[in-house]
Length: 528
Ligand code: MLC
Ligand code: AMP
Image (cartoon, rainbow, N blue to C red):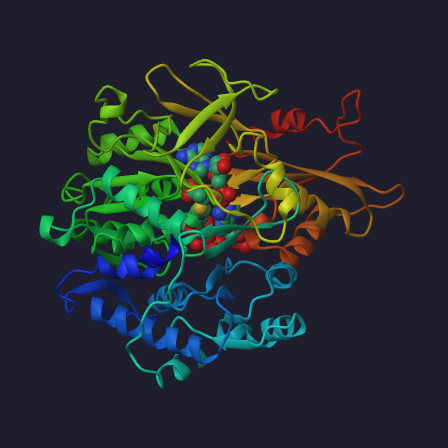
């Protein structure tokens, strides 16, 4: 009897975040620093009004709901406001790493067909050429010093705006990732995925609302990936917690902010670099409630050194672009796991509430506790699919609907999950994913190159970095330096291998497959 049902309430993520703003909208929501060093304070009221103006600007473009808004800009509070405005206006946010070069941007824009592209003022020339050629209707600019056409236009719009109704299943953001193989795919995350994950973490990590004394988050991560954009920002906003907003990661700035903060989130490289700061002491960290690490494996040495230096035990958690957060070490006693409280170094903790996790063998049969296999997951955070790639989406799910993470690991009898490796050919360098296949493709296009292999090897700062082994064409003499230079011109800088070697051939097995494990072994001591 549909006529007796009330319309389902909107599940717009922005509306849920907005509802969690503190009652005092004049309180400071974000402390930031202008590029010229001036301190900036944004009140909750500023976030409300500025996102309304931008949402009204987007509404004035009369785009169909769910239009993609692609954004490649430097980190700024205005960029965060643009994210909120996109949700508010019912569109889909598509953040792009600032390191991406033109060929990479051309692919993303061609694939996602955004209605709006926002870029830095300095990149307007080449980005707008790519965007208009791909059929994008509007290109705005946004500088980290509050310059650019986006704010110039938005200022003419009203500062009230009713969030557009969205269903839980409507897409809120697309994050490009290579998944387990091949070309970059756009992972579609819905309003429901993002909101359920934010609400679950609110409870699991014991966030304190302003009435409970409040938390203060140091935000030092980039805002174009899951960690900085969703886990950190949603965490703060849905708890009405203040953020100390750093435009980029600088260890000294983080240490200086510690006495005013309670929560910090970082990839392992950030913890390694912070440990090199003399100012990192127990005293500096005495008000801190929680240090969270994720996106890449945290070395047990780092975990222990951090305990010794600060008296705090880092809480390591594990997630993915396609699933948001999946597992976490406990913040407090976890009743589902016999009340265990131990944050165990080298593990990523327990499956989070609502997350199903199983370890399976090559045939997909579940393995008993303690045995290593492929990690599969399901739950409310698992994405809707890859943008316009139904076959690729189907490949990544088991027949019974569980998502194949591409990670290899085990769950012990007590419930702790350990990631021991990856079945996907992926290097995680400083928390950024590098797909060897993409880098090898770029190398193989270079003059004089017959073939190449890129492998990840341990690195003291980035955890893991890429090393390239290149086989010349007969008679050709490609030079390692020239190869690295050529790659820097066309790939995001973090994808460029840190070293390149010329070799007569690549090791292959009887099937003709390149034996990357042998190359990894050969070069594993390179940066030791
Ligand atoms: C920079 N460089 C890197 C690199 N970052 N090389 C390898 N890996 C990286 N991650 C290189 C540059 O190419 C440059 O080389 C040199 O280092 C200095 O560049 P920089 O720009 O000054 O580096 P810096 O600002 O110090 O950046 C390092 C960093 C940054 C660790 C702060 O990489 C970073 O913010 N990483 C966090 C990534 C992140 O947020 N990941 C979350 C993904 S979400 P050259 O030769 O040009 O001089 C996810 C899901 C989940 O995974 O579970 O969270
Ligand atoms: P991304 O596709 O950028 O979201 O990266 C997701 C991948 O990062 C996961 O599939 C894991 O391989 C890796 N990852 C995330 N967190 C951790 C962690 N705590 N330990 C080990 N690997 C991690």
